[in-house]
Amino acid sequence: MHPLRLIPMFASLDEASFTQLVSLSRIRTYHSGEILFFEGERPKALLVLSRGTLKLYKSMEGTKEIVLHRFTPVSLIAERTLLQRIPFPASAVFESDGETIEIDAVGFESLFLENSALSRVLIASLSDKIRTLEQVIEHTLTKDAAERVLEFVGSSGALFASMRHYDIAHMLHLTPETLSRTLKKLLREGHIRKEGKGYCLP
Image (cartoon, rainbow, N blue to C red):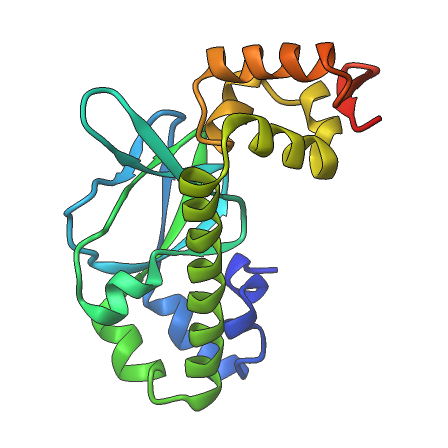
């Protein structure tokens, strides 16, 4: 199955329309560490992540970095920037080898944006990303390190067994050192406990 069929907004396209869509697309491959786009650049295509893990981040003063989201296949990437004709508000880098499908912007707009069903799915996709951004803001501005770690352990504590603490720290918008100190403190105070190589609530 073509990866574009896995995107909800394209799944129900008839064969003729889907063939047109594929004709507007090209596949590009990337290595781990390669940048997909930088903050401030203008989009030239509708981007679909078809393979790999992509980190969306914003650079702050000095070396501070805020991870806004991690994309996994198959996902639309930064479609709002294309639709509103605005620069990328953040940068995106591959955390593994990956692949994107680039859909020509002009062709996509002329062929598909008048389709009401596609427009509704685009709106739904944008709404999901707004909710994700709201969660990032809430975690970063309203919750301290202990609250963020406790919440993560409660929902995803087993991931400590399969993910690097460095990556989890970035997900929680903490430094690795702060995550390590917070885990030790929460263990010492009995708020969390070890479960195999992961953590769980008591």
